[in-house]
Every structure is written in C-alpha cells, then in structure tokens.
Image (tube, rainbow, N blue to C red; front, side, top):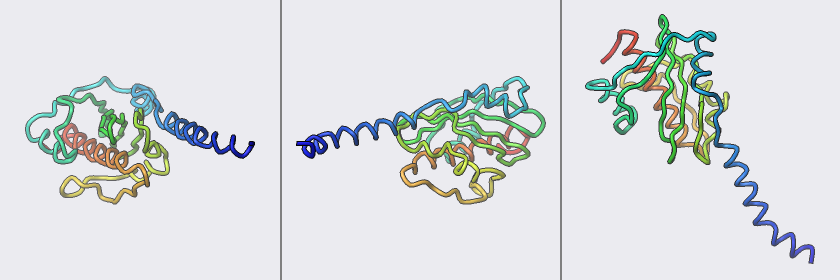
Length: 178
C-alpha cells in the first residue's frame, strides 16, 4: 500500500519541482532605475533619447535579425560612459537587459527583468562576465565568442544581440558610426 501511494505521488512531486524552477526563473532582479543609478555612482545624468531611424535602424535590424521593436531608445551618457536599458525576446517573452558601455567597451551587462520559464541562468555572473571588456569588430560582431548554456540557448542569443546593439548605439551617441 505504501509503495503504491508513493508511486501515485511521484508525478505530483515532479510537477511541484518543475513549477518551483519556473517560478524561480521569472522575476525582477534589479529595477532599471537602480541599474542606471548604480552605473553612475548613484548620480545618473538626465536621460536622453536616440531615434532609431535610417542607417542606424538597418544596422540594428541586421544585428537583431528582425526590425527593432522600438523607434527610439532612452539612454544615459556622461563623458565616454553610457547606460542602456533594452529588451529582446528570449524564446517567447522579452528580457529586460541593462548594459553599461565605457570607452566603447562593455563594462557590465545585467539581466534586470526575466519573464521566461527557462534560461534564467543568463542572469548569473558566471555567464555575464564573458561580456566584460567586449568591443565590436568588423561586421558588428563581438571580439570574443560567448559560451552558451545548455537549455538557455535563446536567452544567450538575446543577451549577445543586445550587447552588440548597445555597443552600436554607444558608438552613435559617442560620435561614431551611422
């Protein structure tokens, strides 16, 4: 009798464990305003707006593999340092990502809000540290490969695309490219 009861409860246990992991994955890890404030030592500059049109829109579209879902983007700039809060779809839901670029190099990338049921591991420092110091090379590619995470492939791709877009946008506002 006990064995039969345990066998009957096994699917329930599996379901509870899976639901717990999905609940753990989703969440607000850092508010965008807090990320921006942190990027500038607690005193961020006023926000600015960059319109994504013309050649810049084409360039961003090539990186994303689709037209951007935004016509303009808010950013913060002081000296050669910029902060960006951008979104990209992982599998089905947008991932809100903060990127700080200093002197044309990624200083930090952080998952701020994660809405997917899988792939949450991209928020961990062991993964995001791969982007530290990354720059763009020819073809708007990063200067280094980014290692994937099994089961988080689409989230990894989303963060990698956003890193590239942030570098392109920084280049634009810092007086560089199209």
